[in-house]
Image 1 (cartoon, rainbow, N blue to C red):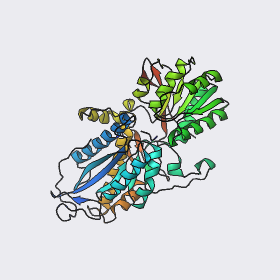
Image 2: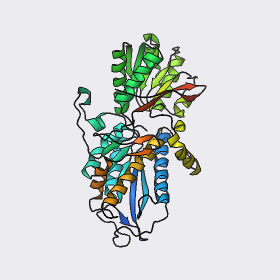
Image 3: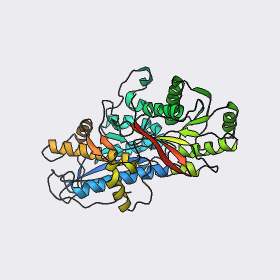
Image 4: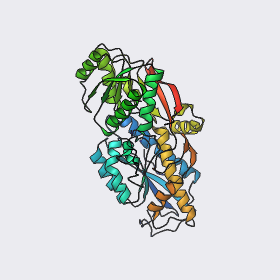
Length: 410
């Protein structure tokens, strides 16, 4: 996805290590004098903070906020106070584009975390690139965002130098899901459904190709429309197809309803999807018991990672109303990568931000490497994460339980 986000004021650092502009003014460096002896750097956040995907969006925003608080508390970058500017894209591309324009116009913004949805990201990338403004998504998984539209033909070309992500791509996720469903779950006849969105359609196509390559059969395909609720026609097609499983490319609101209606139609078979359905809301959306349904998600379960213990404890102590959800760890790491890039730029410029701070931060991002919440954080030549760990989850007694984690080798 994209898949896959709180504002507080922090104590001003007063080391005076940075060159200051006139009181309260913004300068071309992208960092303004906070009038108390330091420089303010803003990290933008774009995510669906309201609407059906807000459970994921709020987790993204909260986790970025936690990273900013931690950086300020530890004085991670001497002389710099970090803040966030969080905007709601409502999972709508046009809104995301408007948000990108707004964030570009705020000179203090030196990096942006988000968005959740790949389709929204497509509307934002060009604006960020023109402004040399770093974008790091904790959830986008569509391959074309980083490898170009012809990646499926083996032609890889990075479209935008400012785009990075901490989530692995659907090339990895789709193949991983197909391998699990065919080999581990023993399913040979799958019915594939997608929601006609960039993320869902792309993921379903990659899954289908790999499932057929392994020897499985796609017995039928169909599509549903986002925000609709009656999928009985699709459910009846699935029942009549003789499928032993369903693969759904899309998000949890539609995925949960589809699973429910497939079972009500009399097809007692599991529904599988990607990280877009890996959320408790998927389970709540189904009136029928959906034990046995499956989802893949990026990375290993955060709760089981030794590297995530402090993040989990600090998040709980922060008193956030919403859980960090599926992309919390990746959002924290996305924000921390921007913080580390700012740190490198300041250190290389005698303790102050250079005039071309945004461009320098983008350059520094390619060299970022640290042990994060989700493991090793670094980026390849396309801006993609080098971390290709994934996990399969299964619904058991009304809750998601991890059943297999692995580092996927293409």
